[in-house]
Length: 94
Image 1 (spheres, rainbow, N blue to C red):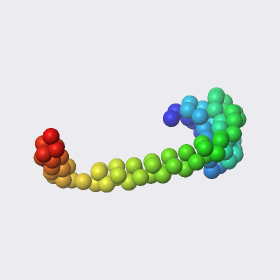
Image 2: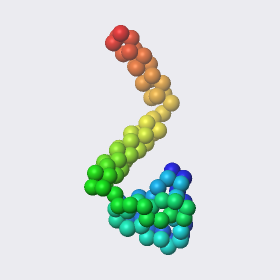
Image 3: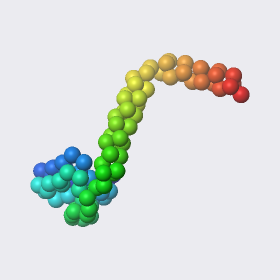
Image 4: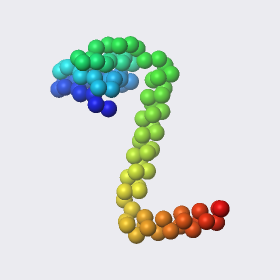
């Protein structure tokens, strides 16, 4: 989301870089810390709830990526056929 990480930056597990931050070369962002600004600096520690959210959010993005990949693998004919089916069943549900 607009953050810039220069060469050699290492973000440890559950480290977080704020939107629009500029992280200088060879910076290490430790586990569970939030860094932000220009240049980025330590802002605060993540809460346990935020760390749990990061893990759940990553899983949600992974699942969404799989759905997206499956949709993009469909042929034009398959997509058109699904449109017809959706219209047909939408009328039945009314």
